[in-house]
Image 1 (spheres, one colour):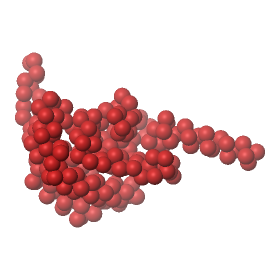
Image 2 (tube, helix red, strand yellow; image 1 turned 90 degrees about the vertical axis):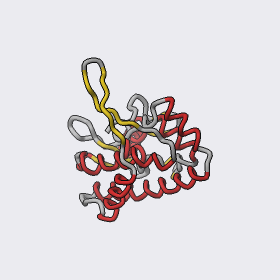
Image 3 (spheres, rainbow, N blue to C red; image 1 turned 135 degrees about the horizontal axis):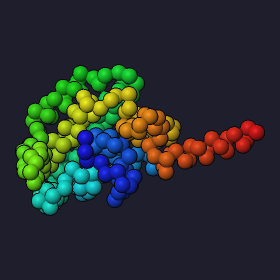
Image 4 (cartoon, one colour; image 1 turned 30 degrees about the vertical axis):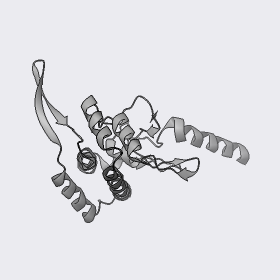
Amino acid sequence: MAGSPQQREWIDGFLFVGNHLALDFVNTKPILEGKARELLSNPMALEKWLTVSGVVMSQEGRALVRIWRDSRKAENFLRELVRFRERLLGAILRIESGRAPGEDFLAEVNELLSRHPQHVRVVRQGSQVVREVRFEPRNPSDVWAPITAATADLLAEVDRTRIRKCESESCVVHFYDTSKKGSRRWCSMNLCGNRSKVAAYQKRLRQA
């Protein structure tokens, strides 16, 4: 599913190495300097993440978010969203261990999909007709639509054997392996891959 910029790994303080919007969402609580850090710390941080992740792309959408970002409603919604992220993480951990997501979580996702469907329309682009997802976040709860749509896509459409956690013990980042051989091991060579290789090299030197 689209929505994860791939040009750089860190964009405006957020990590984008998941290759999937739902995984980039889960990765908004990484381990930094040895401690778990909440990147969605307030509604303004959520606003920024929605923009840099590509969920909110239009000027109109950004203006709508600015209307409610400082509200109590936005604060309450963000707490709900973060709790959902933890339950999504639990489902991902089950998938990575070879199990299916729990029935309770699937029921929750289905309820959210029913209450907050994505709005789709068809538009002309030159001689072609394309489908376009409309996202007009007039209320904080409207953000459920892209989040739960991405969650459903991850659970139902993605090859589960390619959903993985970074192999570094000190990392909690998850990713969808889109490499040709399916042999990706690290969240990023720049982040954990090189550090792990250096650590392994130094260990071999000590043993020698």
